Amino acid sequence: MDEYFNINDDMLLFERQKWNEGVSFVAGVDEAGRGPLAGPVVVAAVIFTNHKKIPVVNDSKQLSAAKREILYDKIISAPGVIYAIQEISPEEIDRMNILQATHLGMRKSVTELKKTEFTYIDGLSVPDFPTPCRAIVKGDSKSASIAAASILAKTYRDAVMTKFAEQYPEYGFENHSGYGTKAHITALQKYGATPIHRKTFAPVRNVINPPPKQLELF
Image 1 (cartoon, helix red, strand yellow):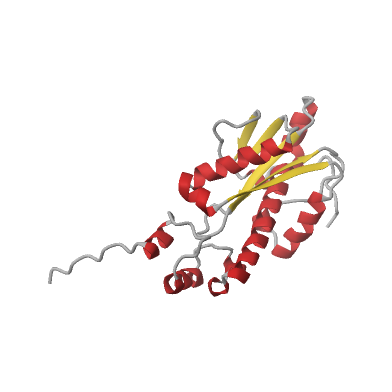
Image 2 (tube, helix red, strand yellow):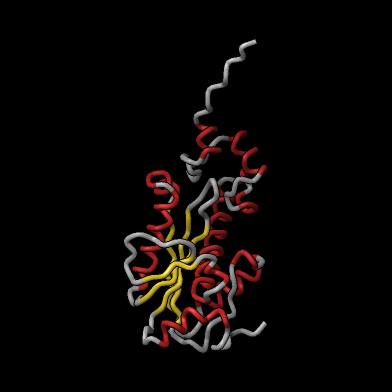
């Protein structure tokens, strides 16, 4: 695999559009961890300022964990790269809901970059965004900046969950990263919820406050 993108690569079409308009600081933003029952949602934002030195990136979901870790290092060490990573805690997720928590993380990560002039957002639009922006459905497979953000977010979050696995070894967080696998649900039912579980998510909520059983009529 070539270490760097060719500037004519299709994954740079969206970025080139803005660069050609004279917009220098074009960010991509993406998240990891909206669906899990435990752990934070992590959001990353990335700006590549050296247009000829961009690592060969792709949608993080299409890459092995080992490949993501290699690319994580290439992204954060790329010449001229600017990046930010934000964690939104399970407590914040429970307080505001996962969609609002994700939007908060996206706004905070792009604000942290400071220089952002325009942002490409993976998925749907985000209200009250701090910069001019465009949402791209499946943007992590269409935009180099979004793809890089997805790799940073996913790799960072997996590392966070692996550390939590040391603290809560019964749950197997190192294997499923908090997603609602059969093994995770079984452990949740056996051992109860941890402080990092999302208490408003139904499988966790039902363990904490089991729904009343329906009375049998016969």
